[in-house]
Length: 114
Length: 116
Image (cartoon, rainbow over all chains, first blue to last red; front, side, top):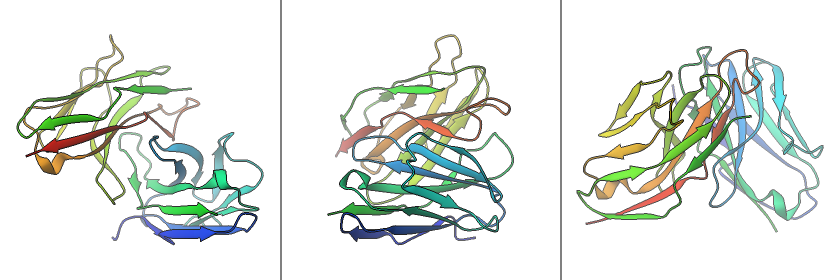
C-alpha cells in the first residue's frame, strides 16, 4: 500500500479559473476527508465521505467548492472561479471503520491563485 | 463543536532539553485525542493517540496523557533531538453518534526548533 496519494502536488492558477484536485485513499479505507491548511494554522475540515456518500460539509465549503467520490474510491475536489483567498494546502486523508485511529494523510496539493 | 487550544510557539530548545507542548480541548462526551507531526516538506503524520481518560499515548520517546479532569493532552519528551524539529498539532475526534464524529479538529500548531 502506498498510502494516500494526492495529485497534483502543486497548482498555480489565475484568479477566476477552475481547478480540480484528486485524492486516492488507502484502498481498504471507506472514509475520506478533505481539509484546508493555510500558513501558520492547523488544518480545517472541509468535507467527508463514507464510501460514496458525502456525510458532512463545513461552512467553509462555499458553493464554489464541490467534492465527489463517485465509486467510493478516489475523490475529486473542484474549486470554481478561484479567488486569491483560496490559496492554501488542500489535504486529503482516509480512515477505516474504527473510531480509535487517526487518519492517514496525503502530502497535500498546494494551490496558489495569482 | 469541538475546539483545541495549543501552546503558542515557536518553541526553541537545545538538544537533550525537556519538551512540553500544552494542549487543552473542549468537547462534548469523550473525544479521542491525537498529536500529529509535520516535518519540513512532508505531510501530517500521526505521532500518538489516546482514546479514553487516563490513557497514555507514546511513540518515539514522546508521551501524552488524556486528562479528563483538566481537559488536557500535553505532549512531553524527556530529551529532544535536532530531528524532532517540526510542527506539532493537537487534535480531537468525536465519538460515534455525536455531531463531531468523523472529523478531526486541530489546534493551530506549535513550531519546535531544536538546536545542536
